[in-house]
Length: 191
Image (cartoon, rainbow, N blue to C red; front, side, top):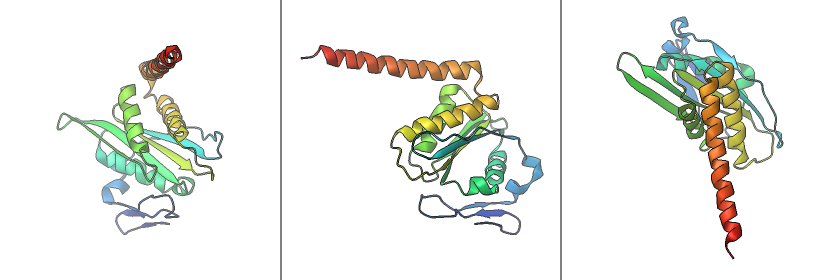
């Protein structure tokens, strides 16, 4: 359930079974002065019946991050998701520092994985949210692959993945695959 707490917004998850937390947004998160465009990726359902969807916004302040998250959580479909994990990275021009944070929203480790993806892709001034609607089957570590794919697709759609981001992510995947193959080859030689 969600509601308007007078001059702000209060979000309470529809169920407590997934470890989501209630969120209170102040008046700044309601202000049109902090409005940003949110790009929604295509929802997809891999084997296991869970559905994943990425949402991306260009942000330059924490107030814009709060506005985007509040806006997403006010959409009934997104509010009903089992998890709405997120990460953001932005440059605070006034302080000349990078500001970054993430939240798992009950999907243990997912926020940190999204933050690592933003760093790997060199994405700045961006917020990524991935919604997961649990389908009844535990996906194990494969869930992180689906979360990353939903995030990457939304980032690229919003113009934050670019060619550099795709090449960097592909190189990291190739490097991991290469190291894994080398390790497996090494194991094959041991007797």
